[in-house]
Image (cartoon, rainbow, N blue to C red; front, side, top):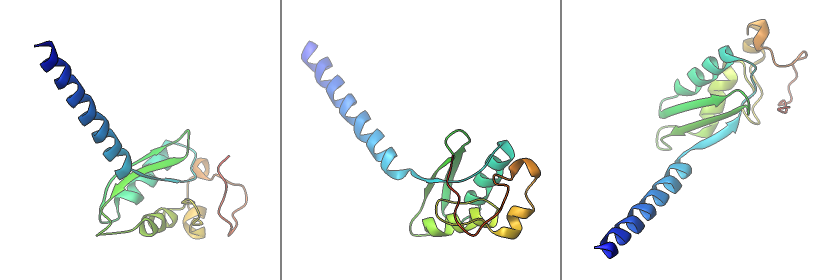
Length: 121
């Protein structure tokens, strides 16, 4: 009986680890510049507006957007483009200047807008 329980434990542990590895493989991430909870809502909404994106969570502290998408329906480039159009730098893609100018004051993450992607501090 102890052998069966031990074997079952090994099987469940192996299954759990492979499921975790699969989950980590499916989650993508990019750096997105922002300052506050309003930025979080805007960034996540922009990512989720892209057909094929199934989840998007932006972390304020790390400035990282974690997302899942169907590669048959869209691409990372399209997701970055949507975030840029919302006024935020998405990894290496500069924010749309007009959209950035229209952000609320607390959401403006730089004093001077430039055509160079901003580094996260």
